[in-house]
Image (cartoon, rainbow, N blue to C red; front, side):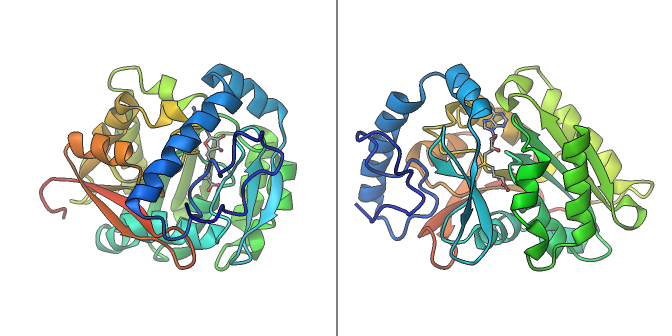
Length: 315
Ligand SMILES: C[S@@+](CC[C@H](N)C(=O)[O-])C[C@H]1O[C@@H](n2cnc3c(N)ncnc32)[C@H](O)[C@@H]1O
């Protein structure tokens, strides 16, 4: 087994010898990863109980600040005994796994706009990394599920304005959004960046037939504004799947949930995530995606996942 990641919660029971959150792991072989998954699973059942119990505990518990190896911050959640990002570099992970891993910048350059669906808004770091690297004239429609939006005070402790390329006025707007309990934000010239946070349990939302497809359709209309482009087919261009691990957040990795997500991805669109667990790969492949393990971020996990929906080339 690889060395435990430093984000292991030292307060976890003795049965939880390994980190529940595998996203910062170095160089595990497939065999080692399988052993790790089994241990994670047992520990999670023991520790976290049912989804409802976890959720109640999640609401009561307060996440604490952690500094990661690239200097950027993340949070550690005591209920899940997991961090919101890799402790080997939160910002590095956001850029590598989600922004670059899904190709959203290339799409934005080609089409002039991009639509992203995220599972788990958390600190907003993946959103900020996307905006910070987006071509200056491109539009972004970012829709994110979040059951437990972070309080404004917690967001302030992260000092997100210190992140490279992040506009202070966007961070201020995010914090104000949290203070106001708002779920939407428009920012930049001609409101070129739009954020919508969908509150509640994401796995419950998608139970309603056609709900995600409608969401994707709304995103397409706002992103294209008054100038629809040929690249604006239905569906999201990218999905950032950034829930806690499959053991800690099983409802967000179930076949039915992943199937609903994939149905909202446009042909050629990419789902990116940090876990390469076999069950996740098999489910996505079974849903018709071209699933690849790609190199992980420098200093972090050995491999991460990129899953592309087949379809005609865009534009
Ligand atoms: C790993 S963190 C996300 C990190 C985030 N992308 C960021 O940039 O900071 C996982 C997030 O999923 C949220 N979450 C967990 N279960 C959920 C559910 N069933 N529905 C919606 N959100 C959920 C948690 O509250 C947490 O914020």
